[in-house]
Image (cartoon, rainbow, N blue to C red; front, side, top):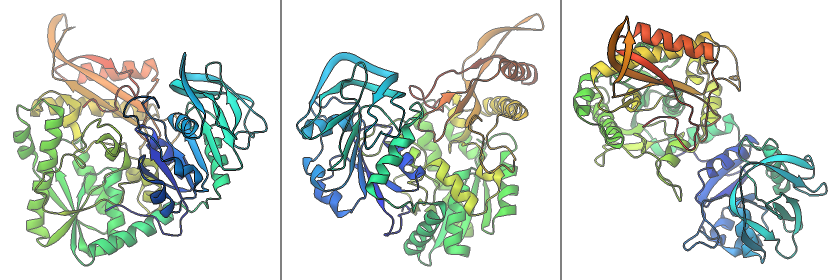
Length: 528
């Protein structure tokens, strides 16, 4: 089950042509308080029209419009009388479908690019005539379709923007959805103004729609919620409790894969701020036993997903024997990274691709189509405390996917101790997002996620004039808005030095500390 908007909400449909950033486009539209939804790129025009969208956006994609098997668009879409915005590949498809020309000019553009726009453009006229945009393409539109006027260019893309304002058709070669295009949000606001879409997508409307959908699906049945202590499961639990009250039992699985002191904190914090029934299942030994000898990351996730369900089944038998539904805090990025629509599978999330086939519950996933920032706003609207709402994201499989190799009790203790030092020092430096604070909005330059990684290898070191052969620790800290993209945090050298000194001096068995300077893409935030 996923929350659906009220029928009176205006909707913008995003056709996904295989771009990982289709989700970012949808998020930008929602930031303008207009509901957006991802749909498959091969959806027939008649089916799109039946949805009565206020506007349609064609996403980018990894293919060339001339490649065999490249996704195409139903040309009838452009005759629906609905404003359409094509982005990158989407612009090229629009040009090709309506009689323009797309070619490989021999001058690709990747990264920051100088863009020259027309002052009298209906879509871009309120922006600087010259600006920096983010490009990522080999092909380019070299001739606009009949009836279109060219409204922007770059040195390598003669038709970097075009429009047929009378028909409400617009296209840009660059990516306004990414933060590297400073005026990108202005493109979406301008397009949405031309759709006439009303800004009704708010945290309050999400809660209303979710509560109605949950009540409709669940009826008077009993419900279990897997509570991890993170913001996602906490908000999901609060939403379900708002809908069905005492029908909900929350189960916290203490699997032994949490951070230092986190199990106790989850029980204390959730107990103080929720009226829902909370049951704790202490099953750490079972998880370690099942993970013994396992090194493949996908196998770890599958095992952990299965054991989660087995723990729920045990708790259900004891505390809610007739429970029919299981609540999970699955988010949009979880779905997209596990493979959805035309997007590639990046990794299986334990709560998306790692559940056993013989799952004994029907799923309730009220956050499945929400981004992390939307979840936080919903949590605030529901009255959850800042300690929960701004807590750093933490993977469902916990520290198991931050140990590269076999998960053992000894390695968990090493990683826990090192990870606690990383978080403590970043908090001390005022950089940790999710710290106890009364601020309504986290600072934009704060850390989205930070943690330690323990690879199951050893490195030579010298400590106390003696040779050591200990474990290295890798520090990972990133800034992000939604986890779809992330940049490594430019930490001060003094902060890194304090972390490294403390880890090596205070955690026996660690003799080396490294810092990960990989962004997403090409890497992911987590190592596994």
